[in-house]
Image (tube, rainbow, N blue to C red; front, side):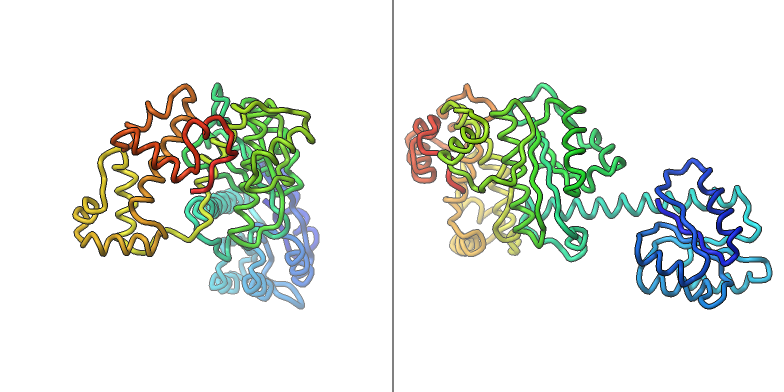
Length: 426
């Protein structure tokens, strides 16, 4: 927290600042100014969390300063100083949203309690802002929503995205609460968990990236680290940065013994031939076919949660149909059954679904089942397609092979061997 103390009596301003520095608060700086104009200039140059100002000053009074500060949103918390004779004058400042006031001479205990209240308020505000931002980032990456202007305003200048994953190596995992210290250290500004995986995306500034990578490697050696930096102007640019960092973390995990990878050079999506060429040119690694297969299975599984398409369907019937697929895909499921359950005509349901999703209900259901099968085999590579398919809604293997080849463009056996490169996007 940064504090600015303002009083035209220099000894009073310097004395209050000296007392504040003796307190055991986590203060970044305690500065002083000796006039309203000087204080306004400092507030316009640097972001302070607390302004403590005298109300009676020549040229620009404390009330005039407070009005300018509120008008320009220069400081979130303000405390005023006043003598007994100025009490009514000080009370007038309350209409400007002043947080507190102190009477001169300033009591040390009251000063301490005032700072404590402001600090707690600031911490709650930061935590709430962080929760709001992280929710927006998650919705942008995983649900296809655009970034709002408030979130975009936070991305002034280049942004660093760092992904921690232990997709292939699972002897150690971490929880989100384990990463809290990265906030306090100033190494991460936002942290979100990647959906359904033991992985996290950390957002911060490029200048702290090397320190962040060094710390997480030391604290969590089982986590693979990938990172990328660039400007964020909207959803597409943020998703591209995230996908580069995600792909880099998988490369580190699969091929590089978890050594951090800068993913800024990566192309998304990456073909099998390009990956082989890049690994050889950059790291002199010739991966086996099975390694490439597992890598692309993992990449498809994780990247499928990045929604670059439109936001979720607006029609409530279509949302219900999607939810029913997710809940019942392992069972027998038809458009007629779903339409009957939600109470609409099957033909109308099919038209609604295709209009919002872009493919037929049956095609969507089959693609969803194939994705679940691939993810299951990725998690347990010793399983065969035959073992998994019958538990994922396919009534017989002949139907499964026919659907798989139509959707994936190859047979399950050739797909598993990695002959045809990465799986196509759904």
